[in-house]
Image (cartoon, rainbow, N blue to C red; front, side):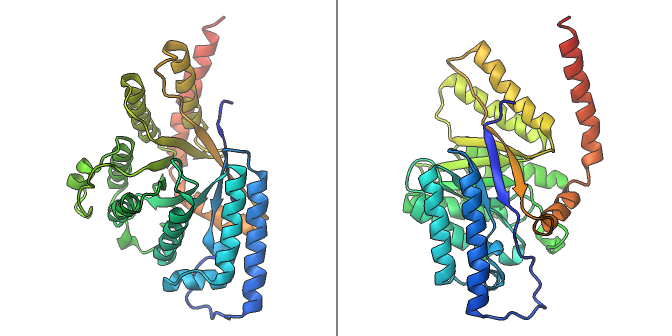
Length: 335
C-alpha cells in the first residue's frame, strides 16, 4: 500500500473514577505494573525497526492512575518498568508515543513524559513523544512551555498532535467552543511547528506565553488526524520547503486502521507523484496506520471513544464515495 508502517497500541488502560476506593497494596501494584510492562514489551517486540508503539500510563494500573491524579512522580516499581520499556524500544529502534488520557491525569502524564524525553531524546530524532490535544484551550500554552523547556535543556521534543478523544468524559469548559476553533488551533500549531516558528501562533492564541527565542528547539512531529484539509495544508508547506531547500523537521502522518484510508492513500500517492515529477526536490510523506490490539475487554474503552469521536463518519462517507468514484474513473480512463 505504500505505508511506512504501523503505530501499535496495547489497549489496556484504566478509566478514572474518583469515587472508587483505592487499595494501595504493593502486591496489587506489582501484579498490575508487571502485566502492563509485559504487554508493552510484547508490543515493542511486534513493532518493526523505525516503527512506533503507543503507551498508556494508566495501563500500569490503579496505583499509577492514583499517582497521575495526584500529580506525583512514578513509584520506583513504575519507574523501573518504564525504563525497561524505553530501553528495549531504544535497542530495537522503535519510537514510543505517550498517549493523552482523561484531563484529570494529563498534568501528571505530561510531567512523566517530559522527564522521559530529558533522558532519552538527546539525539536529533525523538524516541519519546508526548500527545497534545488541539481541542483543549490549554494546549497552545502547554506546548509553548514544553518547547521552551526542550530549548533550554537541549533535548528533542517529540510531539504527537491530535484533535482530541475525551469529549464524553472531560468537562466541556475545557474545550474550544466549536469544531471550527479546534480546526484553526490544530492547523495553526501544525504550521508553526513545521515552519519551526511560534510567532504567528503567539499572535493568534492569547494563552501562548510569548515567542521563543532562536534557535528553535529540535522537534519530531506526528500529525494524527482524519481531516483531509489539515493534512493537505501540512503537505503543501512541506512540498514548498522541499522544493526550495528549506530545512525540514522530522515529520510523519497517522490515521486509524480502517478509518480515513482515502486520506492516508492521498498522502502516499502525493509522495509517489513527487518521485516521478522532481525526484531531487521531493517531499515523500511517511504515513502510518494506528493499530490497537488486546482482548475485547481491554479494547472496549478505546472502541467507545472512537465511536464518540467519529460521530461525523456519515458526513465523511460522502467524501469517501466521491474519492472512490474519482479513482475509479481515473483507472477506467487507462482502457
